[in-house]
Length: 179
Image (cartoon, rainbow, N blue to C red):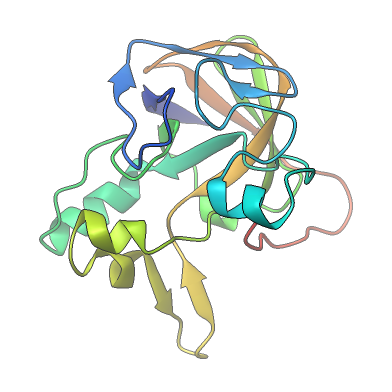
């Protein structure tokens, strides 16, 4: 189990999302009042490619442990500043397999669809930050640390302090890839 430490949303396509007391997740749509809410893709670059693609990026979750890691490297990043909707603590988000269900608070359920693929906006936010959230492991493989994406299966209001319960999918687990 983990905990929600912050919730964020922005009605406009801004890189940073202000935090709030709560957000409401809408089944099949995403975060109520967020620019990325919808059945089909809302990220501008993806809309340009094909606006009919399903929105697999309805809710962006990021682990607060990444903020701690960045702070130890001299970067100051607060919840919501990298565009996440839900900041978590105590769940190893990056190791979850595709299809994992996260129960957020008393009612909401999201299904993990993949990794966030960090974009150059991160570098524009703070010089050198992109290199901190995208690196390479000992085998030379790309490692993306900027959180995970999900879709909303069951809606509900969530807030800081709410519990996160992890439900792994049955069968062989498929590692996360960028969506």
